[in-house]
Image (cartoon, rainbow, N blue to C red; front, side):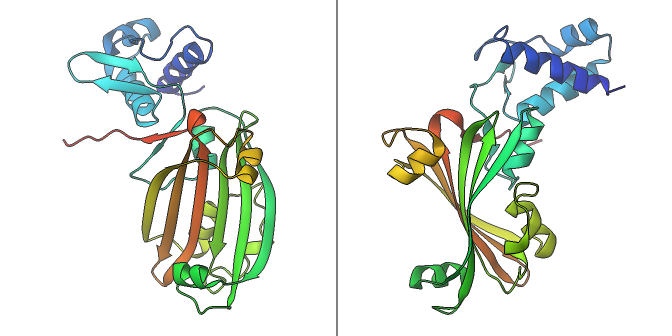
Length: 233
């Protein structure tokens, strides 16, 4: 039997997905949920808190908890793989590998990765899908010195983010978030028009040994957003 707080989460998500709760609607309080599901208030609070942390609900102190913007949301404070984000929402995840190749580093790529110009680098381009819709185009350059078997991996089963964190555990990251208009090729891959605004994250990750990878993550703005819940207590 699944834990009771998961049953509460599933019921609320089902109400949202089937239109019984719309963005901006107030959800039941902890006391009301505890009564409805015959659980403790603490169990109901955990269900609501996790949905807030996942960006599905938004909490206003002293007012209540409401259904958030219906687009999926990724945290700005943690680096979480796109597959984990999608599965955590209870949605279907798929990945298509567009490009997987060994390249010669251009001057800009050598600066990004901290390698010599014209030295070998690995490059992959993947499209990540949520419920059959593309939500992220991932273009990633990898330093082969820290992940020599990178190109041998099956990225339809395991994301680059997960694999790289196994072979070169993440210690630091830089990232910049921008609003961009997609190039024609990017728009085609994401199944949007070139006039559709996108959210783009440029991220460089480090292990204790050095720079591991640089990634450009492009999301259709209408299907994705960034945010998170901060608790200063």
